[in-house]
Image (tube, rainbow, N blue to C red; front, side, top):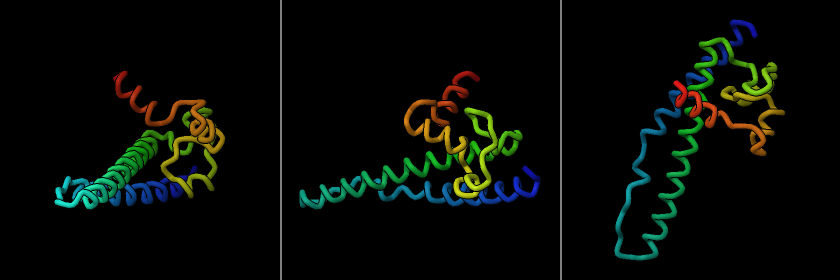
Length: 127
């Protein structure tokens, strides 16, 4: 991968990191509100659950983006963390924070190999 390509991916990932960091600061939607009407409380609980799921998804995405930026810094970006083959530029353009080639990602999705979050947790605990 050329230096220009790496800089392009780094710019995209940095912008995504800033966007996600800003979005995660807004936690007003998860505040518990009391209302005299039971139906309103049920509706608010459903909206709160949706907001929590969105925060969780965005938090996981932010973790993936940070990991991709760390791989750029250490020179391992663009290489599959499982099979160590190059990840196709088409996949990197679509999902720049990816840690796996498409074949290995499908195996992760089927729980045949460990996901990046599990690998990150193992590495953090080993340190």
